[in-house]
Image (cartoon, rainbow, N blue to C red; front, side, top):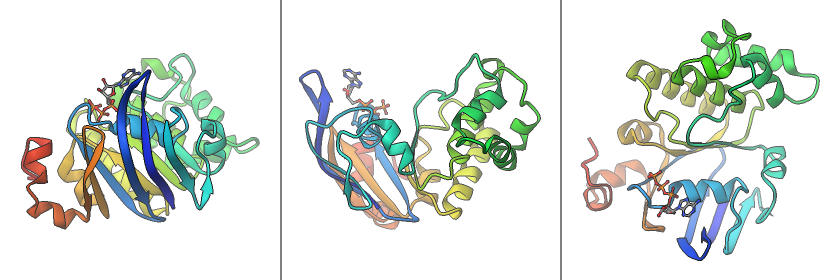
Length: 232
Ligand SMILES: Nc1ncnc2c1ncn2[C@@H]1O[C@H](COP(=O)(O)OP(=O)(O)OP(=O)(O)O)[C@@H](O)[C@H]1O
């Protein structure tokens, strides 16, 4: 279980998160929704060790990892696919995957990436920065997948991509979840995220204003109040 316990965090004296508690149970998909600037990216950055909270705790399977480095969290099975493309643009697809693989398992990592996105397998020698936006996003996701992470934080991974690629990416997220990974999903395609999710949290100005199952959200005013839109 990934547990974010009463977190407060922000930037240089401007607080963003206020007493946020959020749980990602094993084998679950949790959607994190909220308007622009609500603090979703900030929350993921705290969870993955990129930003130290001003108070509160980050617990992974009961261990207090508040303030641990991103690397230490990766070693414990937590992976963050950031907003924008998390790839090295000057390296080839193969090199990007190899860097993410555990020592001695490069071949297996490439095979695993190919299984998730066959399109990548056909482009192993291509320099990542020359691929399309969708292909780069597939590579960013495949880099997460090759490590068989137990917890994956996904920040708007479908942003700006063509509908067909978005379909492929959601199919992949389903595969990741079926494989046993727990997902914390920040996503602009709300209905798609809710289709996949077991639980939903809605953030507004750095505070949790709703936590529950997707079906409960359908009836709540929360949606129109905080997200400025109806669910469907
Ligand atoms: N590096 C930073 N320095 C200072 N303020 C920041 C920084 N990053 C984010 N903020 C501020 O923190 C607040 C929350 O931003 P955050 O990116 O976490 O929101 P978000 O919910 O992910 O928004 P979006 O959906 O637009 O990506 C915003 O007011 C933003 O301007």
